[in-house]
Image 1: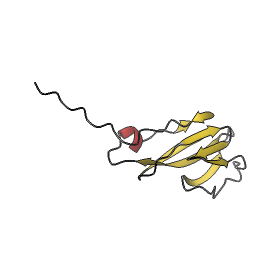
Image 2 (image 1 turned 120 degrees about the horizontal axis):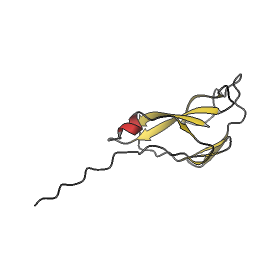
Image 3 (image 1 turned 180 degrees about the horizontal axis):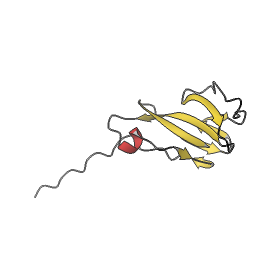
Image 4 (image 1 turned 90 degrees about the vertical axis):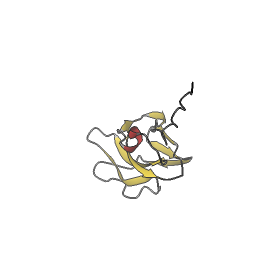
Length: 106
């Protein structure tokens, strides 16, 4: 499954997992197997999914997800690369940048 991420500032976290053609978002499993290149799923019924779910020429499912982030997201969260996952947790970019290390005073 190819996942494109669309960053949005929000307080709700996202946990995503893939198992074959099942995408689980915050505990809600969605069977995306009905999507075809000729007939994409127009309304997959989940607020985390943006637009349609379709297949590319090779048959791989393509989906765009909202990527929540905090007030100080790192660049890899604001400009995420697409992710390909066949099974397991989706490795999402960090929600926020780590706080700056405090400088030691002599």
